[in-house]
Image 1 (cartoon, rainbow, N blue to C red):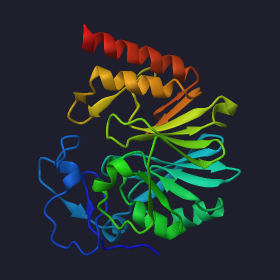
Image 2: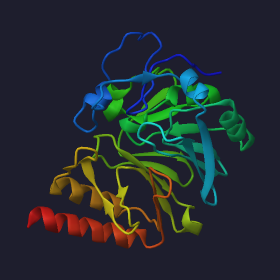
Image 3: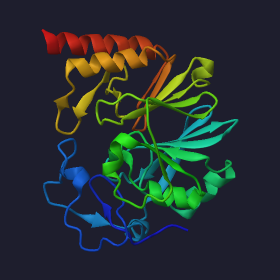
Length: 272
């Protein structure tokens, strides 16, 4: 149902097109927002990962939202989030590893209406996931140059918002990448609203701060003008919970207060 022998970068987890057999470089890792592993560029395939006993684990994050995480950890290590709504299910962000058990479980939950990915570092293996679930992948057109895998199922969207279903809206906030996106879920947090952020709004280790960076691995900050623009966008949406890119990285309740305080502190330090 999905391709096993396409090249996958072991550092960022992005799956490349099948016809590329002797690739030496990963443009996503060579970009200044990511990094090439100090030991050099390395590749794997889904077949190799399966032989190495990789598997996906699932945990409920809040009612209607379940994380899917690959174990042992692979590449950037992000989680995908299965959002279940009355209008169908959507996968927020994507992970590289896909197996029959994962497919069967998601199909048992009603399958997928679509996949939407926050930014190129989490494009991972969206093409195989979309093929397995016969669904579209929604990517912002500003980042289309970073698509390295098959794009037959990609629907590039433009502008500032995309309504996927009632109460489920993709919002372009930029910053990390020009097309970086969050997903607003109006029914999350018991109706108070939740946002799914990838790492564009980065939850820090204490779960009581957020940060915003141009490059996380290379510690390059965003300029103040970008923070002010992002703050103005976030102010338009109601949310109590934030669910970020990694397992356990969620802020439950008071998220808006935390975001506002974090941005204020960020600006204070950069502009002082």
